[in-house]
Length: 287
Length: 251
Image (cartoon, rainbow over all chains, first blue to last red; front, side, top):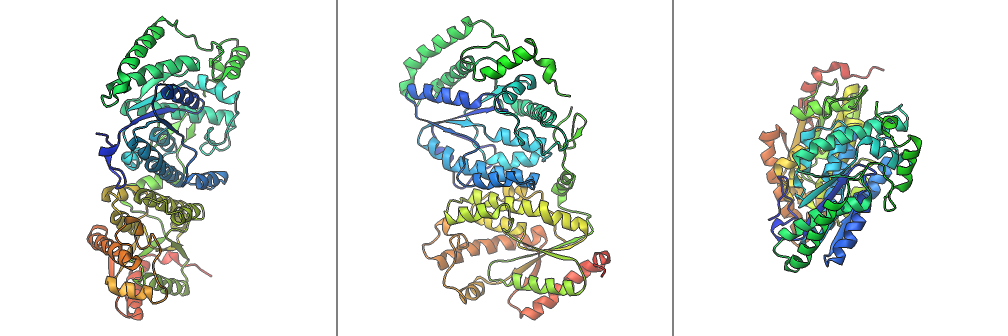
């Protein structure tokens, strides 16, 4: 039976939740939404009903959060609880009904991003864990991991710096570049800490999107195989799994900064290769 | 590099100036600010708001800097709450969380800074309202208390105790029904709003009774005449202000 991280909600009956809850975590620019789009298509081709959810299109609190973030007067405890409200709203109204109906739920971030952001902003880690103890334990948590020097060009050369992504509320007076490096470095460290606590499946997000996706597919197939209730999976999936494993092993090790046609951020990667003669590391080293 | 509480990232202090205070309050809720926090609690129709408003006028006439803060009134959050209530989309959990968000904003924006500045802060409803209502809606008792772990502990928390039937009589004396969430209609206790109100508020009363010893609520018999209650309230408030003369606003 499905479990939570400690506390249950009156609205959720854990025993009638089938489906699979698959979380894709990662910092800004790690390629989460690209992967979710690829996985959704693939799972649907295999005949699974898939729901994808994100952390920014909420019915209850989204508008309020958006407006609050426009101003400069959103306190940190308030911000933390506003996000928690939004999360639980989504849990109860998107995730749980889909699981009950037997869907595979692919979620773009989950409690871990929210926890990392709050902890980096100085909130008490135990307090945060207690709030999110009502969350369902996912079937799998994939953490698309990038180092700060791999992450930076993806963000900078695609959509530019964003006030909140750069943690400008934490480092007033710094420019966006310095602030971004400090903030994202802190987030990565916190993610690494959460990773061992919550058993993340850490996926190197540096290679091109298809390589990352094949890694994910392999793990997801293994997860679906374990589920005896979904009898139609068995043979087709076993074959696919065998094929994928072979493919992955045969694939040569991917060099960082290699530009591929399928790279989700081709402009970003090539820009770095260019600007730093193939070695972007020292350019973006955080202070 | 170290993260989490108490923490620096590189040369930069990560914590907000507020955070150490919030963190300290988490332990016990105690504070050592020059201000005084006084809150009133009780079910709808207990007369607590009337009593608080009389106390407010008295304190002002005595020359104190008095600030009033009402439950569910954060300019940043209340539109979301209103929207959720109007669309009837709040569950016990989101009802609880959105109210804690509202309370957090008022704590960060006004209650805490004003206590530091030495004001007498008067709150119409406080965390005990959430403890009672959310638990009556089926939320975990311990979880709700932890959720409000950042709250400042009041100097005095008055609980205006009134029998349910008297409260209902007072409330229905000027209108002909109850609002959806006020009556706990979201819990499907009864299709009739008065009956639902009675059942829901009955649960809330039980929670308040348990909190009297747990949270040290100061009980006022809310069936007594208004003047008698107010005299009792002022008497108790006075003892807390005697030790805080510096609160007086000098002309």
